[in-house]
Image (cartoon, rainbow, N blue to C red; front, side, top):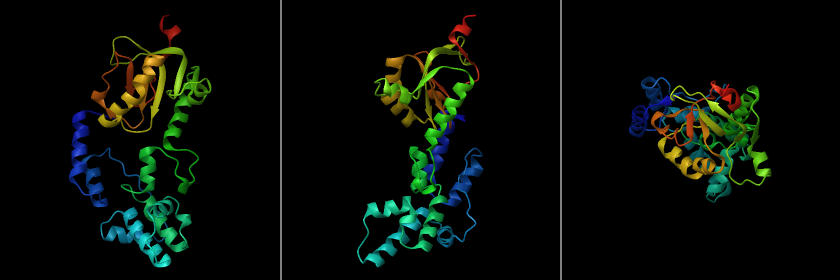
Length: 261
């Protein structure tokens, strides 16, 4: 999904103007049909989750309050923040099976707050769900498979680090390729590809440019950044300088030797 800056600003302003409740999320979905809700319902009896919904409160915040009160009464001293956070990340640490299940229900059904949302935002491994890899890694694997499918020779980040590189993109193409982009008259030579399992907004993209992309450009030449969840269209303004943005793997990509035929 690629949004114009005006479309992105409209959604951002709407998010700021509404409280972080499930009712607000429903209104956002009605106003912006592409806005997706990742909450998955669980068939067990989620008493604490239903209570949070009844009082219109974020489930993970409700779980935190109940957990803090439970531990304080059990230990007779206020629990530390680190202990609370650890138990919210992994409810199996909670010394009460019923409460652990209730907290788990709240965490996995909260699309605004909590460790699961933090995991998605920061692409970190989430031990509670026993995920073998984070979302960021999953998209890197997807990109690797697509490169192999195109019979493109490449070095991945681990191979590059073994060669002594400290800061590298996800993949460097050993044979440069030309992407025949419909927004350009001529093809753009690509030496590297970076995968981002996130939406490219102004703040994050400018930070990536400063911390990563321009460094890759200085060391390896022009490259391609794939924002798998879309980006603001106006941010794709550095094509002639050597950094292209796409929201998916390009289908119109050919090897440099083929492009001169």
